[in-house]
Each structure stands twice: as structure tokens, then as C-alpha cells.
Length: 150
Image 1 (cartoon, rainbow, N blue to C red):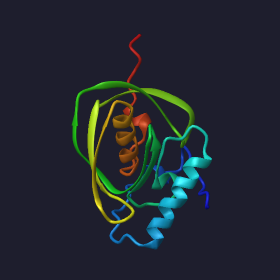
Image 2 (cartoon, helix red, strand yellow; image 1 turned 45 degrees about the horizontal axis):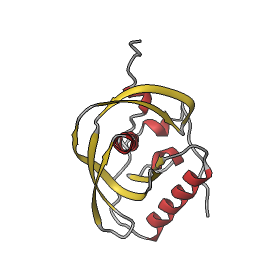
Image 3 (tube, rainbow, N blue to C red; image 1 turned 90 degrees about the horizontal axis):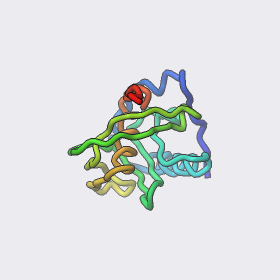
Image 4 (spheres, rainbow, N blue to C red; image 1 turned 30 degrees about the vertical axis):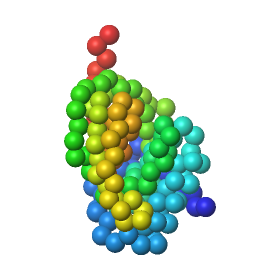
């Protein structure tokens, strides 16, 4: 078990675009395992993108709503609907904002065994997919915040 150091607000790596993974090997699987260990070791975490632990690779781990996923090169291939969300992020402790996200999102990725997977998430899972995949492009949830109209 290896716990990686989380990167926080102000760290420039959170704004960098992650590179595609070309070869899935033992090193990539170890990074995914370390990311999952880090996620499990961190309070209130649902998912983690690689740049949140200082790695500029297109890797995401999710352990949320009965889904435990290790995703390589994930991308959104379809989305529909609209939902209002409240979001937070492990890299921005104690910050929460309202966002507008798709209600349903379908992603395509490769798992740690090199197999293509297509997954569809609705509601909270759709929000999670959007949030994490945006991290891989250097976009953070604060960029998606909408003003409270109440």
C-alpha cells in the first residue's frame, strides 16, 4: 500500500493537461493501486484524478455509489439532460459550489487489464465522471461554479 501526496489549490499541476497512457504495464497498474489506496486513506473522497497526486497521466480512480473503477484514458462520448449539483473536491478542502452538469454521461475508457469499457452514469455518478475527467484537462470544479440565484 502506497499513499501518494495530494496536491492542493494553488499547485500548478492541477491546471496542466494530462498525457494519454500509451502502454498499460505494471508501473501504470501500480500508480492506479496507489491512487486507490490514497483515495481510501482520504476522508470523504469519491474519486481521484492522477494530477491530484502529481502525475500527468490520464488516469482516474473512483470508489463511489457501489462502483470501484480504475480508468485509463477516459473520455466522455455522450451526455444528456441537465442537473444542478453541489460539488467539492479533495484538492480544495472545505470548498463547495453549485454547478450545472449533464444528468446522464457515457464514458469510454480502458481498464487496468487493457480492456475497453463503456460506462453510463446518471445523477451523482454523471457528476463524478464530469468532475474527474475535467481534472485530466486541467479544469477544476471552481471553473464550473454558477452563482446562487436564491
